[in-house]
Image 1: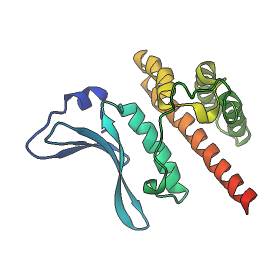
Image 2 (image 1 turned 30 degrees about the vertical axis):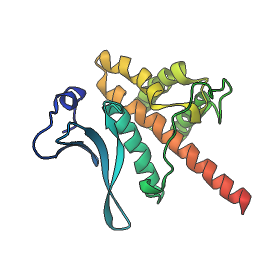
Image 3 (image 1 turned 180 degrees about the vertical axis):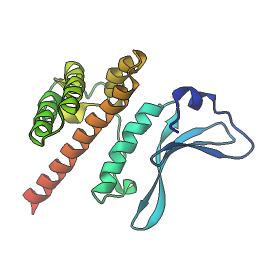
Image 4 (image 1 turned 120 degrees about the horizontal axis):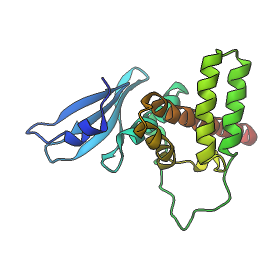
Length: 195
């Protein structure tokens, strides 16, 4: 059963290190020192591996789930998470008002159109349309590569607080998969140009 933020807050150090699973390979390690760490257990090339996600409370449960979604997409593409470059937090002084990459609004609407053309059920499309519009309202003018986990959480948290937990869980996946797809597309186009 997935963890809740309340459960994660309640974990106390014990004499021996212990783990609690969130599902899908994500788990939390609680050390005797009191340090609490999110990790992802996965298999790559037939070997069991573990990837560090981040320390709690610096990385919250929702952020850890987002990062796991991105790492799993990389795994499906054949990339070991240990081979991915470490993320650097952008400096506030570096932040430019000019978005990098296409705008989230364009990517989200293209995705919605693609789902319509693929023959998704009406109820699925209606729900997806509501989710996409919520994200466009909050993130529409941002470049897809500029969207951070904090931005996504600023959209998701109010939805979860209203009690709509299902949508709150689906929106981060929607954004993370589109971002990861765009990154892979850009990497391939760079490889083809340099070849």
